Length: 277
Image (cartoon, rainbow, N blue to C red; front, side, top):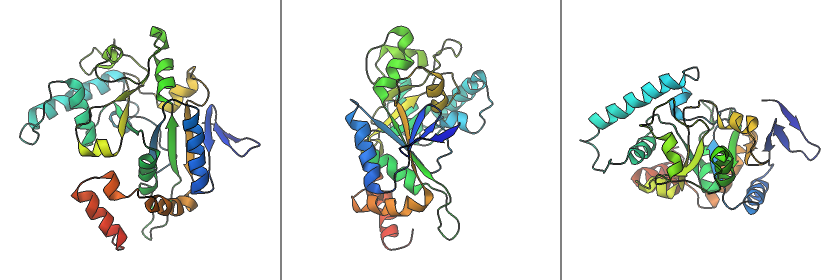
């Protein structure tokens, strides 16, 4: 994507506004500006600003066709249904709840994780940067911001949708169903609430982008669509500011035990606090 700077110091990736705050305070101010202009705002943090917004099912081989991905998706779902019962005591009567559960445990799906909390997304962005063996940061991190209501209304404009954020009970998501015929499946991603089936998804304020048969990233979907200006934006945290902003985040109480409300999260926080992480 072509990049250029404006006179005010903001950057644009063609149609996507990009901000590069020089301090944690300026980053928070930019988030506040985004939130104030919208009824809802969602966030996604990534440790390398070059990573694109596509779900895990499409990530390893972006050249696969929708038909090939559908075959893989069905194979994954069937294998999970056959082999998970000894390990999981949960009601999987809904195909959507099965999908959310698989996403939670890192199984490839058409879901892309977002959060209602900018601090949660920022934690993932700053802690997943690439580092060399000496701990030096090698990549710029990024925090994506999205207006999920504006996104859905534009994605579903062909059916004159004027609602907000969707969930598994909404009629509009049937066109994205795992059991639907791939030829009839909708294409443009939509923003949905998931089932809160674990303490982690609650703590992380987890929400999702649900992709259809399309294998186009959210950035390209936005650039080539008719979305309102600013619906999707990007904050880049340059590599030499990552550790400084991470320390600021920790001081505000966002740490491992906040993100992972279990013994693993506590263990990680103790290790980091005493210099073992």
